[in-house]
Length: 107
Length: 167
Image 1 (tube, chains in turn yellow, brown):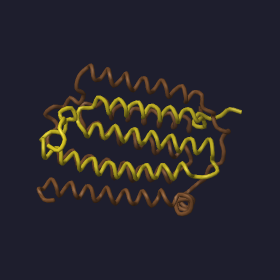
Image 2: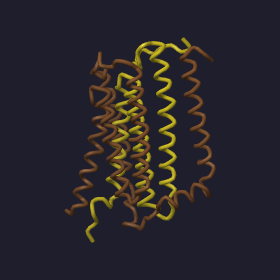
Image 3: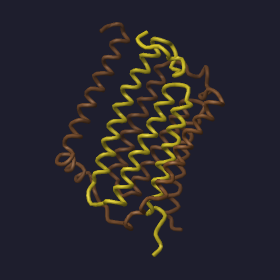
Image 4: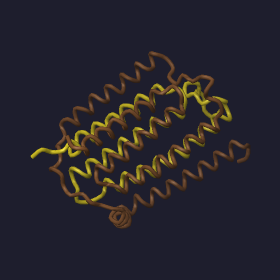
C-alpha cells in the first residue's frame, strides 16, 4: 500500500534536525544576544517537534509527548522573559548587547 | 501526489526557510520575521501530526507572546541599525557551520536508523486528554512548571528594579 508523504517519521525528524542545525549555527555566530536568543527558540522548537512526532508514530497510546511539548512551550516563554530582562539590564550598563565584548562579571 | 502532500511539502519548505532566515538575516527584525515564519510552519506540521490543540498553542504562545516580547526588547535596547551586519567574521561563520554540520551528520545517522513507526496508528488526543494527563500522571511536572514561571517573573521584576538603581 502506498503510504503518503506525511506519514513517514523520518521527515519530521529531519525537519527537527534542521532546526537544531540552524539553532546551533546561530548561537555560535550571531553577534548580538537577541540573535542568540532567537536561535535558542529554534532549538527548543526542534525538540518539541521531535517529541510530538515520536509520540504520534511510535507510541500513540498516550499523549505524553504532547504534554511535554506544552511544558517546553512554558519553559521557552519563561526563558525568553528572563533572558530579555537580562539583555535590557546589560544594555543599560554597557550600552551595547554584543556577546563578544561581555567579558567581566559583577562589573 | 495528492493535494495534502503538496501542502505538506510547502509547510516543510516554509519551516526550513523560516529557520534559515532567522539565522542568516542581516537585520535582527528580519530574523524575528523568519522566526515567526518558522513557528507558523511548525504549527502546520503539528496539524499534520493530528494534534490541532498543540498547533493552536504554538501560534498563541510563540507567535503571540514570545516573538512580541523579543520585538519589545529590540525596541528597548536602542538603535541596532548602526551595525546591521549580524555575523562577525568569516572564520566564526566557518566555525559555526563546522560545529553544526558535525552535529547534523551525527544525528542524521540516528534518524536514518530509526524505526519508521508502526504504520499510521490512530492518534486522536484533544485538549481534554492532555488536561486529564496533566492532572493525573504529570502532576509534578505541571506544578514545577508553574513554580518556574513564578520564579522567572519574580526574577524579571528584580532585574528591572536593579536596573533602576533600587534593590
